[in-house]
Amino acid sequence: MITFAHAYKVFPNGYQGLRDINFKIDKGEFVFLTGPSGAGKTTLFRLISGFDRPSSGLVEVLGSEVATLKNVQIPHFRRRIGVIYQDFRLLRDRTVLQNVAMPLLVRGDSAGAIDRRAREILQTVGLGFRMDSYPDEISGGEQQRVAIARALIHHPGVLIADEPTGNLDQDMSVEIFRLLEAVNAQGTTVFVATHDTELIRKRPFRVIEINDGQVVRS
Image (cartoon, rainbow, N blue to C red; front, side, top):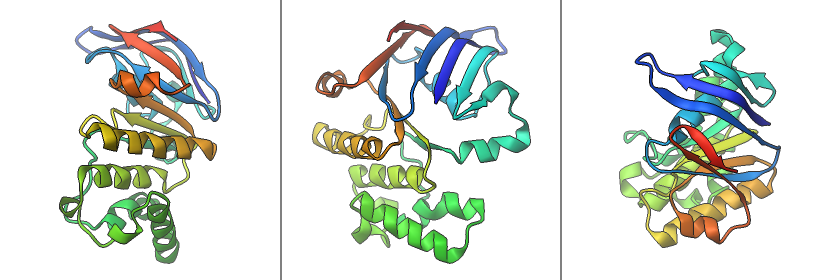
């Protein structure tokens, strides 16, 4: 499902963002990624989602080797991966329903299919009653649930979340993690970067720790 084998990422200025990364995540796993700011978590996620390529070594996701993907293959590859960000990245001038529908609109699905799927996934995350609201009219926790719905609308095989509760209070963080666990229970592989050690401690999931661009614990 996700394999890193002796993967390196070296930036044009010579800085080694990732060094000799080795791990494997199987289909249906829920895995936490931890480490201090600047440790390489976001760089690692950019490789998984195809927004960047390894300088050397193997990065394989959903059967595709990221380094060898052609540019024309990247959009299709990314449609198989859901990405959740700390800052939500919602379009302020679009309704909740329109924000969630965006990936299918870009993909070119029919209007009827888009509307049905967007409404369905909003009900799944408990926001059916908010579909006509705008992002500035809903809470931070609700905005994150909208972002999760948007990431899930195209049935991704892998869901990656980069500090999804970083801007939320503890109670809301627990709610978001419960939602991610429910997504995982449906068979989606979930990989979550977080600093919330308390939430990690209370859950029986595998932890990969990264520091200074290297995996120090798995």
